[in-house]
Picture 1 (cartoon, rainbow, N blue to C red):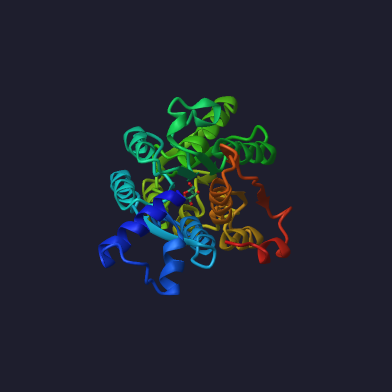
Picture 2: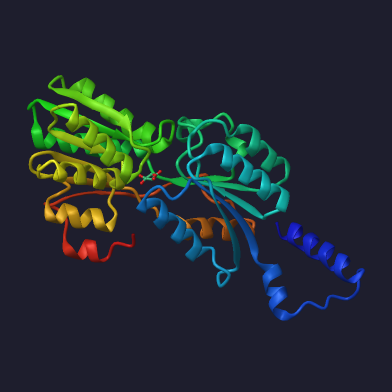
Length: 330
Ligand code: AHR
């Protein structure tokens, strides 16, 4: 990587000064020595996502020795593929990919590999079998993110503990189909439905992880006269939308309808405290320092761990404290 940066700098100097002695100002030298990282981000669909982007910006800052180029894919995989090709063309030192969905990355990641640019994948996976041994294993350097199925299991187990054998009619607001966050969390609920014969799926749709769609879906279910006891929203923003829909219909979220959510953003934890959300499973977006540490290891010639699962927990009103909320970084 350092070699690529040196070659780019030499080429630039040759172009500018006919291979004359370098005359760059100190600030230019500093700029040229920065590690260039191209970050293909999913979008800005949720508070979680925005916290993730901020974390990357804070860690991969010029003060820390980085030049970060962010491309917002607006939740479209095709845009991510184009962004990665642009990063390769620009000759960045590292590519960080937060993939929209799991499939369809082999060709473009093979192109990055051919260009000798290490790829670090964050948040979601590029193949659901990645954790257990992914066939296209050598197409990325390492992965840092969440165990989404484990998160889903926590939600299902909490419902089992709270309600025992009681019949439950569940509305399920899913994330983007094909994203690991959706695949893992939905798989856990499917397993829960299979082992709890008293549970029924009242309605299920993708709200694309956005507040607007979460609200739209729940408004539509209420208008159709669908009865339900529980809403499982696969992220906080969809839960916020669902809660607004319930309130507009004169219902009390958290009491008339049990709300289970994922992410555990600060705002959502405040809603756990006030009783509007009953259970929130943490999904940690603060990957910036983790990516920084990995790149610094690679720069020193070390081998970072291939897979890093972030430690996460979950909150209901019984275990949540104001101190936890106050110390929330997102
Ligand atoms: O992949 C992580 C998920 O994506 C978060 O749960 C959600 O809020 C985000 O949009």
